[in-house]
Image 1 (cartoon, helix red, strand yellow):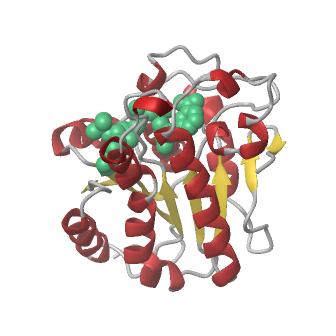
Image 2 (cartoon, rainbow, N blue to C red):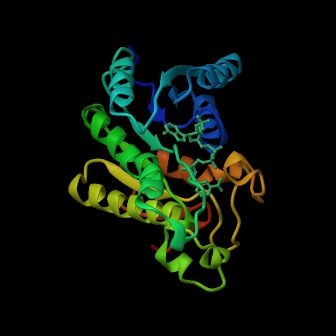
Length: 247
Ligand SMILES: NC(=O)c1ccc[n+]([C@@H]2O[C@H](COP(=O)([O-])OP(=O)(O)OC[C@H]3O[C@@H](n4cnc5c(N)ncnc54)[C@H](OP(=O)(O)O)[C@@H]3O)[C@@H](O)[C@H]2O)c1
């Protein structure tokens, strides 16, 4: 069992990219990191790397698109702790960037299963552990692509990137977060986007074939900011690393 002073965090999709970097940074802070990974082998490699650097890491096999996997993950985390201080719903998929005219419900369903139902599955399952913490925080990793104000701004490149699944899934995630925040005021539910909206930048990861202008460390600044909020911090906000972002 974890000791009362050690902050606990579960990060989904933490075997690489922003999830792995968030795990590295919070491990460096002395937190107990539950490193979620849908592929056990990739997750083990990531966990070993952080453990070798001195972090306290528990690998949690976790496919956010599977009810069974989420239930197994909860059982495993419960073997180590009776409370969860922070949940970072980071796992995400871009889908195939199909043009709206060609998008089918099947195509969109796959993206929603990870990007929308995934965070709901995991949040719902871990609510009892979150409710046992003194200052529970849930961070939803969304995207500027999920912001109506960004997508309808002709100056933003995303306004001319014609696809349905990813941007609408992140818009849905934003609303899901606001509704959780309103209904559960004792838990902070906030949304982070990894890029800088004002500068139209994003973080270089596999998801964008490393075309982003920001490092993964910069890309996780907004996530870390929300994960480390004090008890009197805000709930129901949407931020990038520079500050509040329009919904
Ligand atoms: N990079 C940016 O600037 C940027 C901008 C806006 C939003 N985001 C968001 O940031 C989050 C992290 O993305 P990233 O840039 O770090 O991309 P990434 O390197 O491709 O990482 C995505 C992670 O999500 C995992 N994942 C996908 N589907 C999953 C599932 N069903 N269950 C569990 N894990 C799953 C992947 O696991 P596998 O290795 O098994 O595929 C991987 O660990 C995503 O939610 C993304 O939408 C990123």
